[in-house]
Each structure stands twice: as C-alpha cells, then as structure tokens.
Image (tube, rainbow, N blue to C red; front, side, top):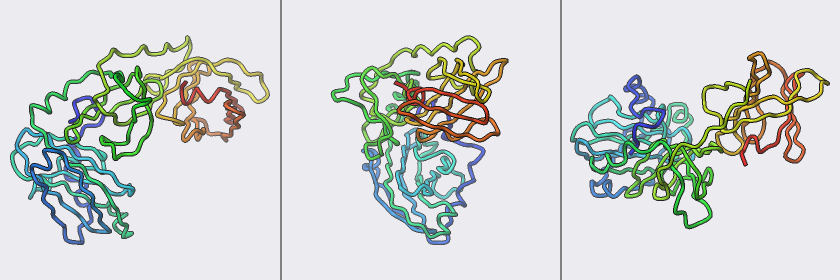
Length: 328
C-alpha cells in the first residue's frame, strides 16, 4: 500500500470521470468475480482481450481495507480503472495514474477492476494478453506500511544483487540492480499478496523501480554533491553528481573546464546541465546511451571513442567520459 510519499497522487480528482468512456465498450462487458479469500492472499489473474472487449473483475471489500492492483502487459495501450460497482466515478484511472494502484476502500461493497484497451488500440482491433494482480489487506496492516522513512539502504542481501523491477512482483521485468549498502529514495511501499514491495529511486544511478522490501532498512539521507562555484542550477531536481567537463563555446577554440551537474534516470538516460558563465547554462539530454537533444536551436552531433564522448551543438563542443552519464 503506497504511503504519502509518491509524487503522483493515486486519486486524481480532476479526472474522476475521464477515462471511463475510453474503454470503448461496443462489445458486452465480461464480468468475473474474485473470491474474497483469493484477494486476501493476493491473486494473479492471467487474461486476454481484443478490440472493444472489456473485462470487469468484481471484488467484495470492507470499508478501510486497502485494495491493491497492478497490471502487466506487452500492449502499452492496456489499462485498468477501479470504481464502485454500479457507479461511473472512478477511484483510480490507469491511463493517467499508471499500472499500480493502492486505494483505501471508502465504503463496504463491491468494487470493479475494469481492464480495457484505449480507444485508438481498440479501433485497430488489437489484442492484449495480461497478468493482473489483485490483493486486499486489513486497515491495521496497511497503516503499518505508511509513514515510512525517506531513505532506504539495501541490507542482508544473500546474493550478488537485488533486482529492481518494473512493478511490485517478481513477474515484472528487471530494470536494474542494487547491492548491499546502496542507498535509495523511498517512493512508497505496498503489499503484493503477503510480500512487501517498495518503489524506489537508487541514489547516484537514478534507477527507479520496485524492490523486495525485506532487504531494506531505514537510513539517513545521502550527502548531496556540492555544486561547484558558478555551477549550473538545472531543473530543480537535486543533481546525482557534479564536477567539471571540457567545453568550448566557439568552433576551433581550445577546450576549457566548465562546471556541470547531472540527473540520472537509469542506465543510458540522463540530463546534463553545463554552466557557460554569466548565468547561462546548456542542457543536454541522453536517452539509450546517446545524446538526443539540447536546449539550443542548432545541429547536434557526437562521436564516441572508447568511453569518451565528444558532443557538438552548433559551434559549441563538450567532452566527457561515459561514466558521467551512467555513474561509476
């Protein structure tokens, strides 16, 4: 059950009614009941639908319980909503809130987990196979997961690395690794069945995903890197690393040192801000291990020799090692 720390609220009040119509319900809705005992243990349902088909999974819940749902599918147009049975106002809308939900049940009754394809995918008559996790936990247990620390540290790991996954279950793909001693920001924890999973962002590398909570202990916030004098401001997100890199503002001019700050978001993905002097900054975006854009209306090109990048943006040049992007 997510605590109050995630950046995006699960209850998007401005969109309570939006997204219901997006299910494209030209086909009859198929309804399946989820046994209360199965939901209490945490159940994983395998299903499939096509085009305008919609599947409603009905769960009986008691006021104050936490209803946890997560969806995994290769089709990125597949979503789910959660709504009280017989009502149109959704408590959770997947197309805007994502693929993982944890809600406090407001009143005793039946609740519908509605799985559907977005209208554009439905019109193309696409098909989608999926796995849907549904769990119910008592209010007392749920409260025990709230109010967690701001930072975790990996501890007690009896193998080389802890898998960081796309979602809160071992059936989700691996997006990164963490090791004993690694520090990570707590973005909220929840139960999948009887297992606690935590949404985290690894300090330094920026890898974000879900890890098994049994290997986490509370820790202090890591020391943030100091921005060099005259260094960049960035976009407001704390830098994962700072320092100096080689730069030149004029074609043919010798390279000099310019202060930088980097925000990482996993292997190969990062935003780099370079201080140019007089309050000016240059932002360079990396995706998939390559520079893809900059905040200057000029051609961008690059070359890489072993682990050293040379990036040219119009008349400007920047040179730095790959480790600046990935960490290490």
